[in-house]
Amino acid sequence: MSDFKPTDPAAQPGSTGGGFLELPRFNAVVVGNGAIGTAILERLLALPALEHGFLLARRPGGAPGDSRVSSLYVDAEQPQSIADAAANVSRQVERIHLLFNTVGMLHADGQRPEKRLRDLDPDQLQRSFAINATFLPLLCQAFSPLLKHPQPAVLASLSARVGSIEDNGLGGWYSYRAAKAAHNMLLRTLSREWKISHRNVSLVALHPGTVESRLSAPFISASYRNRVLSPDESAAALLAVIAQLTPGRTGDFHDWQGEPIPW
Image (cartoon, rainbow, N blue to C red; front, side, top):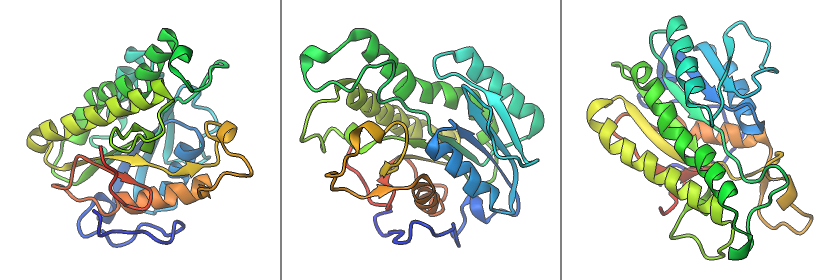
């Protein structure tokens, strides 16, 4: 996908050459109602082809007031809630065409990303893995039957550039870096299995850029030199990248501009 560069982050998904966004009707599941997850869902709701959208979150309130949206409870640290949510979705639709995981944790409960080894806390490390890594395959297990069908589908999951082992030139952020690296390996490994069993599904790990959100706020200062995206800009760009995916293009790691990121 290195040939695709969505230079306009506000662009709507357009002609895709065979992806699910070209279908006359599609169903989507967005997991997480943070800044990016909410913006993704709002962008999808602007597409007339969206037949049913599901928002899965630990606090599912506040979903857009649209009759096509169902809000369901899911907790990344409670496996049974994932299975229950998938069962609920399956009672409403026969198949889904997009499963977009936007759940992630960089800091919580007053604990900041580690700057040095002595800051490492085993409980923080374990929780980071549970939310940033382990949740993904459990989500895929639960929704696997709904993704397996003759039409094109995409499983997208938010990663982060700091999860790249090759790109780690700064160090620090032990828990988050390691958990996102594990997330990437899990997605890449699953893409190899599903290339045989779910040939219609394209899997992709996505770096959303630096986005104005509760997660990034403590790390953005007046001297921050990289571009900071609004949630809507990031969502539009990520959907533009997804729009280029067709069955057979799977197991990749890209940023919001469509550029490949080394594992």
